[in-house]
Image (cartoon, rainbow over all chains, first blue to last red; front, top):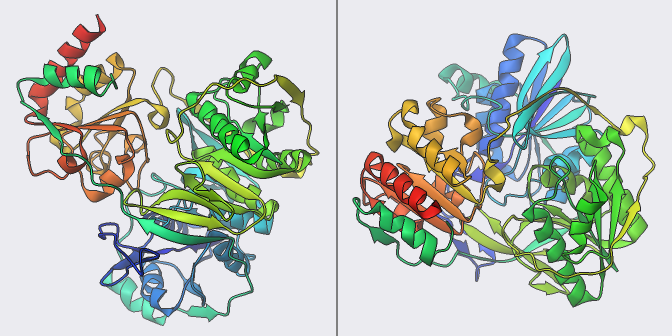
Length: 245
Length: 322
């Protein structure tokens, strides 16, 4: 089985968000870039599956310019076998999915995080599945291989399901897919330098959305404090003033 | 033109979120001189379907084919596309929840539409078509232009208050052409927890953090959640420690929720946690550290010991309820 893990290059989740050019663009000065947290969990599960057998190849793919390569190198250090970077800026979900569709055809399982932590699109995985006209399963919190067959755990409202699916398939994964993201070991980092990071030219793709402007949320009013021994008053305020109880 | 709304059902019932979607569509329809068609897939009675018309649908299409019970993403999106084409819909609206997020991207590709997810308000403008959404997990907003003739959007929960608006009650059976190969998913096993309020649609959420000190100290919070019919949540360290199930983890990498009331006990409020809860209408924080960042986003707070505050609150809630 061959696995493709889609990797989004995002600002570290502790980044203080600022905008520039009259609030029309994200200000990336001084920003640390990381593997999107859900993509990192997806990759971790892919590596675990390879270790238990039944997986012959893990490729990671990213749409972005050369500045995203350290993120792909990190993915290689975590345990991917090779990497593909499609050499164009990621601007829009449809554009990104179109690019990925050009390299995703030979894989049995494609894994994508539920969303990227920057623009929160939740779109690329589903779009890619439709472009390839293959199955997709969202809210996947577990993947196992039994007798060569993929079994997914899917979270549904109020519970979970075990599913079998036709392949190839896009699994859109969320919390639970792996316990913790795997930290690259020194050996992995050394090996990653020798692994192939293929740069491919983009295909022609249309942008169907564009950012017009950004804004920061309005500042909240000061928190109304209640004394520790007067929690009754808190309940009264929630009931009578905020009217939420 | 027509607007198509996919109205998901939960065991045959609609929820407030369903009416938010229909009402949102009706409001756009009014501004643009359009009509609203709701599409329901699954086993829903006509009397339940009629509830949608209380919020402004002109027509309801229903698909009752049992093959859709597996919630197959490929098949369901194909059915939504078929309905959009049959209705000549120029806009398709879905919920920004698990199922809506799974289907909307597929629908958009098939209709050659532009997609924007997690929209939080009525469109800023129609020509050009611009909508507002949250980005950076609630740390900012963006206005986004959709550059395509057909628009697909997912609407965030609690971002539009349903308004009653009564039209006709046309309910029509809809039978899209489906091939067996469209159904790609086989459900082998379903495990449902019954009697619990679902975290993602709870109006009130009670949440505990590292300040709860151990997984054994959750009795008070559970009692409070029961009294308030609230959902139960926790911060990441709590699920990492295994004190609570990861399904209760709210935050940037867990569930993202927007209840009317979020009460955080012993949660300091790391930026990743706030990303998952900052859309809540009212936030209450109880924490022993007065410098904890949770107080910067909270509306009401107590600096103090959670184990002292929780029993007092339970008492007061019981009094209020009686």
